[in-house]
Length: 211
Length: 211
DNA sequence: TATATATTGTGAATATATTCACAGCGTGAT
DNA sequence: ATCACGCTGTGAATATATTCACAATATATA
Ligand SMILES: NC(=O)c1ccc[n+]([C@@H]2O[C@H](COP(=O)([O-])OP(=O)(O)OC[C@H]3O[C@@H](n4cnc5c(N)ncnc54)[C@H](O)[C@@H]3O)[C@@H](O)[C@H]2O)c1
Ligand SMILES: NC(=O)c1ccc[n+]([C@@H]2O[C@H](COP(=O)([O-])OP(=O)(O)OC[C@H]3O[C@@H](n4cnc5c(N)ncnc54)[C@H](O)[C@@H]3O)[C@@H](O)[C@H]2O)c1
Image (cartoon, rainbow over all chains, first blue to last red; front, side):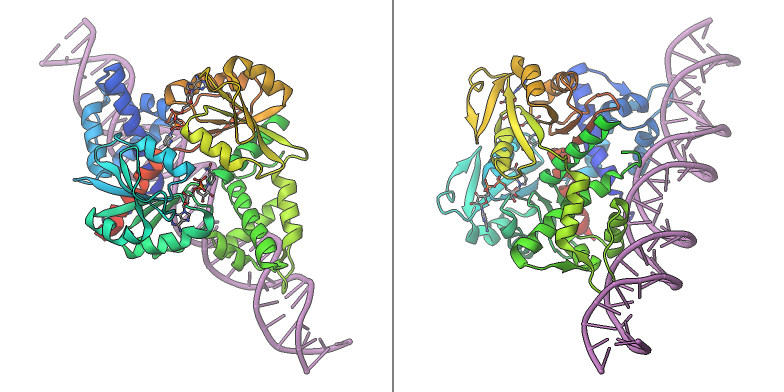
């Protein structure tokens, strides 16, 4: 990956792909114009075309983008060639919701192991995913070749967990704990701060109401 | 709200406040410098100072920011003067996790009602929050003066739910369904797309590993 | 009281992201 | 075959976000 890919573009590509898959699967459409995709995605047509440019995909004037081909292209860009294994740490309320949601949903991006320090949880299976004890983590992560992790442990435990993950070779994390994780520059962290997002929604709700 | 407040700044203010509350409550510190807060928040010191400028809060050189006062200032800026009531629609796995998490956590920003179209859920109480049937929604939202909502229904239902919410006076939404909601310009939508975020983490995990 | 000093507040500079706007082109119509 | 049209691809322009850099300043110290 020599060129620096904008973070935002990656997010939109994932979004485009999902929308395109819907079009293909549900509406049986074969082609889309940038402005159609843009409308579904909530962005401008120019943005869509710019993103396509970034991944080097070309459409045709008059016909637009060949959906099937484009989905393939985005996949080639976003996905690992083989299975990309994901682990989830912290099988609490949120962790279980996520495990259940992703179970069997994506063949190439699968949660292959869950971990929790609660001894009652080790050994259980949630939505087809085995839950391991924390001390098994390094071994399991290596054996299953896990490179990506979802952190759903309490805030106070998140840094320790992140350190463990890093030392076990994880390079991408989706972090739900409300803390700024300190990781080496070679590790990517995507934060999902639900509380902050709710506060934003609440703030702008008032803002808009006032105007 | 005459000046246009940057979206990103609002998010960071929420984050700063949480970090500052920790400092006050746990570490008993009274003052912080911009670079200390910046480190905790994972941003630059200049960013912190710029954000403070935006809400019109001043620190003092040599001492920094008076934490208690600053928390108060951020609160004045972010929070409603009285209770801001929130509703949650879709009491599934994710919805229940969120209800449980926020129960009793914030006095001023509270989930005061949940809704689900499953008749088995209407009438139940999850983490002190009453779950209502969908047809009760307009009435309950008005009575409880709800202006903000969390959408955790399946993607196919989210637009209908959003329309209902808008017509009941909701002006801010936190949307977990993977669809772009079409709402009037006077309504704010904050999207939390867990799938896209996981794909981003996975993508950059590969990216970093390669380099 | 005077001084040294590390930090604030902020205009200007830079970086990043998005949009504009239009030349060029492929396609369906004729 | 030819044409007219509406779209794509993209350089340039603009908008937004962040960082730089430094004068102004409040305080701790002597
Ligand atoms: N649920 C929400 O809506 C919500 C909202 C905002 C933030 N969050 C954050 O998401 C995270 C998870 O939230 P939750 O509601 O699922 O909490 P939870 O308490 O239900 O689950 C936490 C789980 O982590 C496990 N755990 C604790 N320490 C551990 C460790 N060191 N190693 C491995 N496992 C450990 C616990 O046994 C538990 O199963 C928290 O950081 C929380 O702040 C959640
Ligand atoms: N759980 C996750 O980790 C996860 C990840 C990515 C996206 N999401 C999205 O979050 C949303 C919720 O996910 P979930 O896992 O909680 O799903 P879920 O199926 O467990 O819950 C959905 C709930 O919504 C209710 N519902 C359905 N239609 C409704 C309607 N018209 N009005 C009111 N209630 C209705 C259902 O009865 C159910 O209780 C979905 O849109 C999903 O795509 C969830």
